[in-house]
Image 1 (cartoon, rainbow, N blue to C red):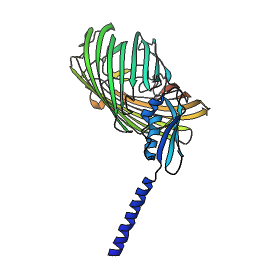
Image 2: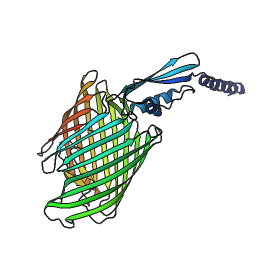
Image 3: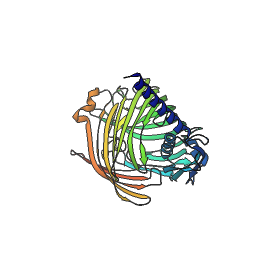
Image 4: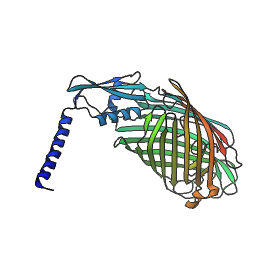
Amino acid sequence: MTFIQKTKGALLLFCLFGWMLSAQDTAPILSEIKVEGLKKSARSFIDILIHSEAGKAIDSSLVQADILRLIREPAVSHATYEIIHIDEKQAALVFHIEENFTLIPAVDLWTTVEDQFAFHLGVNDYNFLGRGYIAGLFYRKNVYPGYGFLFGNPNFITSKLGYKIIGQHNKTLEPIRDEFNESFYDYTNNSLDILVDYELNLKNKVSLGFGIISEKYIKNKGVDLPEVPDEFETNKFLGKVLYDYDTLDYHYYFTEGFRSFSNFTFVMGKNINGDQRFVSFENDLFFYKRIKSKGNWATRLKIGLATNTPTPFPPFAIDNNQNIRGIGNLVQRGSGVWALNTEYRHTLIEKKWFVLQANSFWDIGSLRQSGDDFNTLFKNKSVETRAGIGVRLIHKYIFRAIIRIDYGFSFDNSPGGLVFGIGQYF
């Protein structure tokens, strides 16, 4: 290459760089930011979510990030924007927001370990006082009554910082089984948890939490099991670290993208088997794909591992409402679990606010009982599977207003089961 050719190339790059700088300099300045469509939400709450600033040049990537941040809020059903040019140097940015109704009942119905009727009733407001606060109360009857509260602010001072406080009193009848015998214990759990979130960027969020727990076990009935006392009481301290990688994109009730949610928990305090420390790790991987205009394919892979010492109350369970639809309530407990859920959701009817979806699903998973080897998680005798069909009744403008009804069919001689709840299964 000659000197002249090199000089021409350098001049071309210099001119291109100058043109890019000139294009940036001529980008219109935001004279004002407007928000339209607000009914319940306070403008000051919405302003926390918008990072575009008046007086600065319009940044399209920043505006797109504002839209995503708005749509992820429970208070917002959908959001769009437009740029109105005032003259060659100034423009106004207008966000159009469709609000959600966010005062949502929580209803779950199931049968207990002794085929008694059990229920969970609650109410949650995901836009409390119009400022994006989360507030909720619940009452649960699972043989014995339980209750709790929730309060949080996901956008405390800034959209990057949030907190949540949860208090609960739960009492249940828990089965304890060994290879030949079964016993039932009354289990009482009182807890108070505080969780602080920090958003690194739109895709990454970390959370730190701590809490205090009071537990009490009293034998109710059944066979005496070796190394399990008739009565046990303990106090514990809990610490946890959560990491959320979220690339999900939403269009009303449709979802597309990938998400990974991890939870590492450390507990100090005497357990029923004598241990003083307990560690667990859970990870949920989600993948969603839009299929043409009416379909949505959704998949979740859950993996959980915990301290593998023999204990009658390990943390994970094979359960109707957690991982395998149609299998029953608290079928087994263990120190390790994996579950794969995949389903196809198809819109049958869509009106202005109402949607009827049908879905078909396949759930498969396995449990490692406390003290067993790791490879038992993958042995055929440990694997449970169900497939089934269901319906979704969806209100497009009420947050999580999805009535879910699924029936899971068994592949062997065990019975199937009906699962009812509010919100998507995952």
